[in-house]
Length: 311
Ligand SMILES: O=C(O)C(=O)C[C@]1(C(=O)O)C=C[C@@H](O)C=C1
Image 1: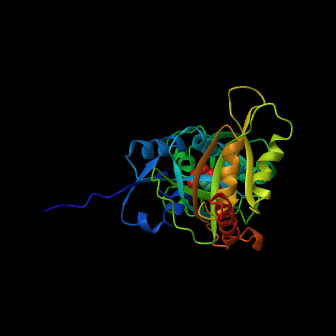
Image 2: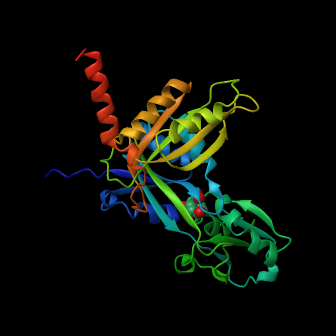
Image 3: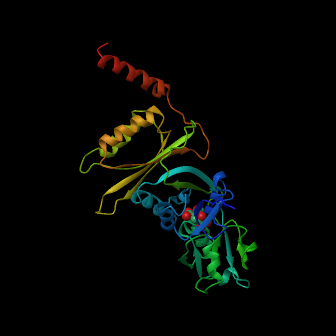
């Protein structure tokens, strides 16, 4: 009797993290094997080695901004593609071992991105606290039951149903509408179909020592009517003052205006990494001016062809 082998999907664990909630939104991952890992590097290594078909990773938080570990890993690990985007609303509770009160709390364990989202609350209600970083929002409360290094932990709501911990405070996030954006990363070169509500992710380096280079980069998009939903600089790391740009552009590589912008970037930049074109999580149709429609590019190319053919 032959048994179908399950495909493996890696996610930041253990079970109960927001990353797991993002993976739960992926229809193809349902009923497959989910592999809990401890960090983004491990998740991407699983994809590179073929151990997992894809990995779910956090890439941006509405309060704390871009997740630098993810952005840097995507710049360094070759041949990865983003194939989907998912949004998860995030809010937090403060938990402790039973018997602990808020007044007892001196050290708080928290994932750094979660800590950054609860900083105002913690500074107001636990003003003298110290912080121990944890690898995830579930690893933080779990650590309270393993060591006494921390007195309390920042955790996702509902954690008290899985771990023997007491909730000291709820809704401790500084912004009640906080959202984290996740991406599903794979090694496939098959580009998800164009939907009209798409995003294209890129990492672009600037040519060195050129006045106005950043403006020239932006012009590649502006002159083709392509809107950017994200542009963030990250240090390349080899010398002070050298940066790469992480970019999300509205549209799909199969949109003529986006393809033309990519050609412009490739001519101008020493390094362009195409991270993928994929459906936007918010399913909002891409907006652009009529003069950047596919037909306009196709018509212009046909005109050039007739000139080249001497017609
Ligand atoms: O620890 C988790 O629950 C995660 O899924 C990780 C993560 C992140 O890496 O940004 C996800 C969402 C929250 O904003 C904080 C932490």
